[in-house]
Length: 64
Length: 209
Image 1 (cartoon, chains in turn green, cyan):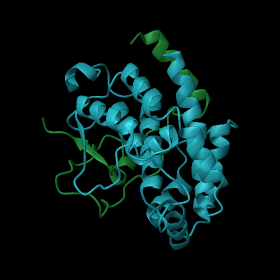
Image 2 (cartoon, chains in turn green, blue; image 1 turned 30 degrees about the vertical axis):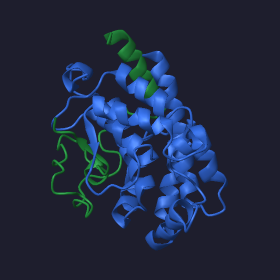
Image 3 (cartoon, chains in turn brown, orange; image 1 turned 180 degrees about the horizontal axis):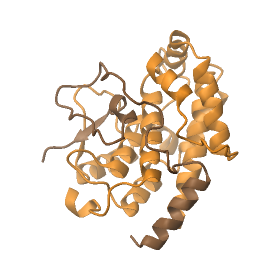
């Protein structure tokens, strides 16, 4: 990926409201793990990426 | 194709991509099951998306969804979800891509999708009964491609674009219209509007990169 196109793309997204400096957690700071989380589901990544903690609801990485 | 070949080993995910992953996660969640009270409150109180007073269509749709979440009652929204998307017999609004693309459930697009999921090494969680062309499942794949997880790095924009174009782009307008015009929906009209505006931007942004 060329840095240039990636910059244009980021700018475009930010201009339209997706992203920008404070985009890290759209909705949830910390919520309890959901009831539907299955035991073999890996823990959600903790680096400011938090909404998915209770919406990682469908796929898991296949152990191949 | 291995995960290593597909995924892009470059720098950590940028704010914009983090936001995209979060929006996909949010859409996935809202269309997988009715939101919890925590999720409604989180949507309402979020100031991370469109927090600069932007008046784009996406921001308008986001603020309307926030308003709807603020006044939303979980029981009522659950009734709405069950009536609109689950129903008894044939549900008023289908959430599966095959239905919009071919008119049938479990048709060829689903078979192609399954092949691709194997290639990118993702699998349905045990206990998920929805087929893989459910909008929530597709959004979950997009989230995974954008953000990766503990075991896989984010995928390239090319890989993201390809998946979006093949499996979401051609039918999301019909899905959004179906949700919007259904007599059973209220809260979900706002979800559909937000989803549509987001996908429009995704589509256009994939043209840039």
